[in-house]
Length: 239
Image 1 (cartoon, rainbow, N blue to C red):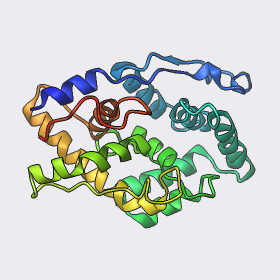
Image 2 (image 1 turned 135 degrees about the vertical axis):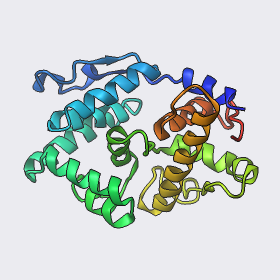
Image 3 (image 1 turned 180 degrees about the vertical axis):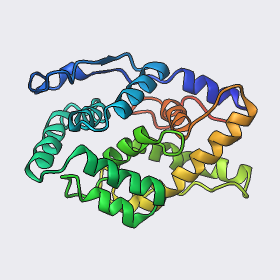
């Protein structure tokens, strides 16, 4: 059963060229990496971020990385974060402390406090959750609409396979006019966190790989397929 998960993780691909940021020249020493986008190069980028968490520029790099596939938004939202943090005197230490508070407490209140350090008025959660995942990939996955689509289409299969396991929860994506995940999906995000941790533990026991919550999410990201794929192209067997 784990073979489908191993194949999906090995097939992970999200190439990013940080040099494509339109203001890259304003950040000497940053926005200079080309991430091939396979599992190993992406993990190396996560490691790079954690080694530079004290630098606000590194946080901007991850924002741009997360939004890279969204050309309409990646530059302006990276700039929005930088300008907001500078105007409000928000430091990398402030962001780290708030993010770490959520990592420790894992509740809505701590996430909301962390969210107040960001410039997004629409209560979005995907970009914010990305930095959480980069800080603690063993225990926190990323989240986005691609993940939401997979969960919404597959939760019955995986929930029924073992009712005693943490159960996936349907998101509100597609049920409202919102085209992004927001705080209205916090319960979905919270359940996703616990499910990926549990699944990572089971996969670690059944394979020779030490799985992280982030690895489980990367496999799901791959399994869903392209943006316009209505159904997963790479089914993931219940574990």
